[in-house]
Length: 364
Image 1 (cartoon, rainbow, N blue to C red):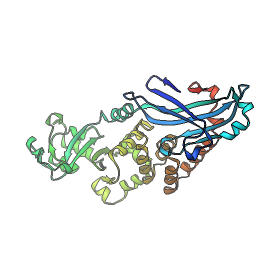
Image 2 (cartoon, one colour):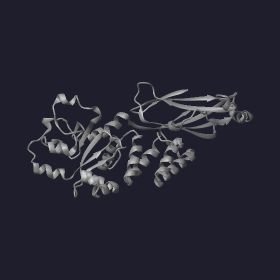
Image 3 (cartoon, one colour):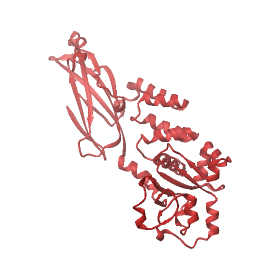
Image 4 (cartoon, rainbow, N blue to C red):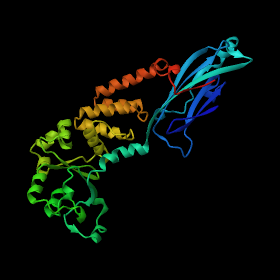
């Protein structure tokens, strides 16, 4: 039995299969009811897909639902076992209650949860944030004014992208000192340079600009005090980074902080959060890296937001999140997991109030 259902963005096919005497030797002698949901090929797919919950019951001869039992399938925790519903002998021993003309009626109420944000929209959220930021591709190494033909001779392993969150550095006139300061070289885009900036203006700006290096991307951010900019928010949010900036150590001497194990996307999401006050629409797996970063640099608010996202996501199994909570001694994540467990244990009361839900489909 199948039903096609759709919302404004996605199409789904639900199916229910009933096996009166099991599916295999393990389930022989049991009534097995399996619900499934599929997205037709060439249809848009939701980003977080998904939690399938269903409540199975049998209908007695008076039309009442009996022996309700709920089942939940989460892709990240799915196994190959068939979930048993009722022993066949129970129905046969009470056939006067449940069988009408030797036929048993089974009811299956389905609830399907999925994230309605598509992958394209998730990607676009971060891209929109980065679009106004000046960006260029460069090479690490000795600074030099390269001709176009020289670029093809560069080692690609030295290539990196540069995001200028000051919105000023990449617009300065070509300066060997400037390029040495930020450690890049390559072909100069002369049309983007503004030769009207004085050396005095440049020196004043450079005094507050810091380099933040991830694996393949370099970020230039101003940490000028008294400004409500991205850099000031970063220092306020992270006591660890603030200490690195103020301590008389190598980082302060070079005005550079390296994140060797951090992907550029992770740091971009961190900056998005500092700028917008919320996490971007993004594949939920991204938030694990952001969670680990926020723990390492003591960004408590960001860590809590990531924990909430991960607990709500079906991409993370309970066991994986429990390991993370233990590894990072995260009491808040532990509390969220306890709530998640309580919801599952009280599924009939919490999730399956089917008469109050418009998105429930019933098969009889």
